Length: 204
Image (cartoon, rainbow, N blue to C red; front, side, top):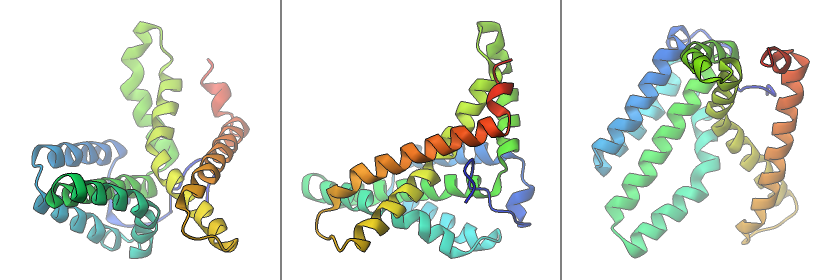
């Protein structure tokens, strides 16, 4: 796993789509799910997101890896809605969240860090007139987009350690290890950026 990103080299059709087009499609998908707030639409989006992985040359295992880290949150959301709201709402929210995470992960897996940085640099250029550094803004945005898979990886690592110690029935014990793992990833990312000269470049 790369310390800066989670790009997976490949030759599938989605790899040839520009980063801007993929991010725009992700934004439109999120907006569409909010506008058409129906559990059937959300389930359809989730099914489409799952089918996209093998269709673009990525195995279904990568989709399952993203969802496996997300299921405790989905379970909590679903149970809350069933107990205090409507089951349709719980189903819709869970399907929406899972679909968007899968789609965001798909963008991350098929987009190089350099492509993401270049896109955000171009988009942030007008901010130069306001005294902002477009390069630094681009770096922050790129790392934010890539943070979802990193959180999933941190949760997965914490859960594996949880099971290795023979612990069960106390999922709240995973919170601190996840935070620690994310801090380690952030440190490793910072060191990798400095080693590549990215941090120094953004200061000019």
